[in-house]
Length: 359
Image (cartoon, rainbow, N blue to C red; front, side, top):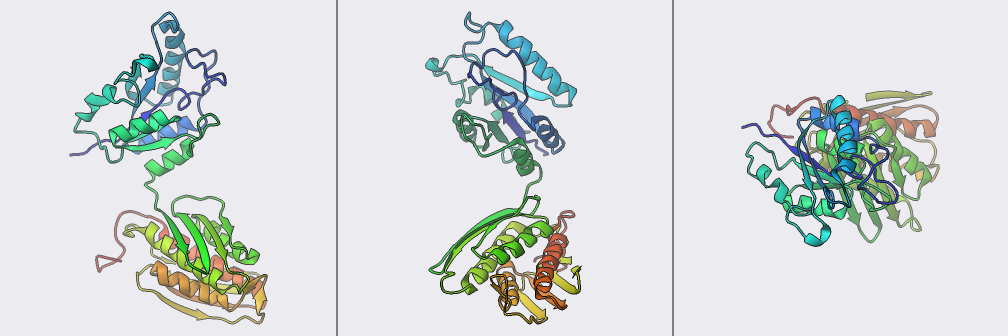
């Protein structure tokens, strides 16, 4: 049986912005939270249905007349509908906080009819809100919580990131590697372009790692605190090992990937990277460098970086470089490998690119 995921959404501060004075029971102007409409359209197209769940303290009393709510709320709903966004249900609790009603978030009494619906995919369902009560509501339902980033209540997410996380089923990994020689944290997202964030204490090496993120078309964050007072070896090697592990974990079962790829010129230099995410580590390097260092990076560590990357990524890489300028040659190597990674990790379907049945 096909099932449908539900996105539960809070109203005030999640769909529409709250006034700065926190008087959320009256609105002179409606302002939509940035990015909410395009994000919800993406989620709609990914098969999500929407359920609004909101606490409206004392709605219908003299302190909060229905007329003060119905006009702005109706206008908001008209705007969403005009954009093709329709809510399956609108669940409104009107109790006061002191009443501690089971229908009031984080209570889930209003959602009980949905829990009996066997057509809902609860494993993919989620809750988006701006407060801890929304997170608690999600926990009580057993679904994922996304708290929007706001000045008032914190949170880590924006609507674009939420749509990406739910609609794209992104391939992500976070790896921490701590030894006596280095402390490293790496995060990758193979399905999102973002400016790389890299810090290793070696400026030129940072620049090369940034090429992997930028030209690989992946979101890459890597921070390394290494024993540079000894030399650069451990920082370069362990960064490669941690990055390779992150790539392998993010690829998962490798279904749909391109698997192979790249030749790239850089001025007088020419680098060729042929790689295969075969699961069998192997590295072949052809090339030589005349200089001992480029920036703060020893050139002997360039092939060593890629060899270490192959070990933990399960990667077969043949890398060749030729030219006159060692700066160009090193950079061409990193860019060629990054472009090959871009081709290899690109998801083109759900087929496993292997006749063996496994990678």
